[in-house]
Length: 435
Image 1 (tube, rainbow, N blue to C red):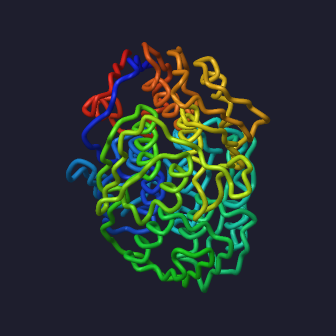
Image 2 (cartoon, rainbow, N blue to C red; image 1 turned 135 degrees about the vertical axis):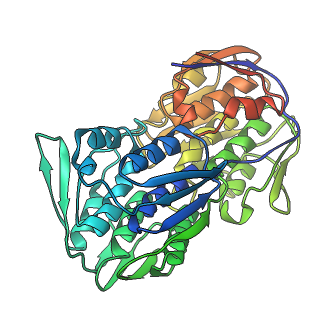
């Protein structure tokens, strides 16, 4: 396992450009299975989760051609059905959370799929009911195979239907959409997730010949077609990386320009940081974080303590709450961080408390942060990254702490952030990777 050694206390400067969106990449990569023709995807990030999914897609019989950095062509003309029933396929699916979105396209394309429970971050329960019920609504059936420790789906003749999702699951909505585009008749999905990355998936599918309307809303209508064709697609910038860079600049008191952020698709993210007192200027599609010695957390209009909570889009993404929590430790004021979706994502705060942060972990979902206003600097610490987002939050904390910190298990960070130490060192950070 690799380790990051971070010499904290250095100012950042210059500019940095976010990578292509990880969560969008996982969705559109699964969509290439829906057609025999070539799909070209631009701006794919060079990160573990994406590279592992590309490798698995290649193992399934898809022709993969790297055209340039971040640009790949995928042709799923002949899927290897024998491999799709193999133990190796199930084993690899078990290690990749994004592989759950194979269910919809493979069921639509082949009429059957065997699928192991997916892996991913250990951040609490991540149920699959929405995915499975969506397939049942389209006429598929499934059963659990105790010998294979996997689910068997069958749906030779999927038919469109009306469904009201019990939760606005992003990956669940994506799975149902991909199964619906080749189903007979019309599918209506109410309480659909509508994140920008899901909108991007719909735009790609429509470019491939699908008929999806209502894109950007929580009410989607899909008219099934007989087949899809090839298309080209470019990923949005990664909004989580944008938020991470905002946090790094703020907590280190640095001035930083973040280029080509896709500002229109950031939603409420900039305002969430502004409520912590961080100034964000917009220049075209760039954002500039001016150097600030102090930033003060707002209160609600009635004077009560600010609560920052995740919510389905257009609410705040849960993937940035760890970053906001760390940034708040050096703000002036108090904030309640409420992580509604995952009950294990706040458990990393014990490492921040060891660094001198004043945080009360109320329960698995809520933490109260009392900001130091830079009067008490965080102390260096040795830490282990439990998941992608906690890992980057620990890195941000270490960058602000005077002295040398270490973060083990940084393959978790590599899963979501491309070449992060070299990119940050280029703007003034001091980070070294040790194998």
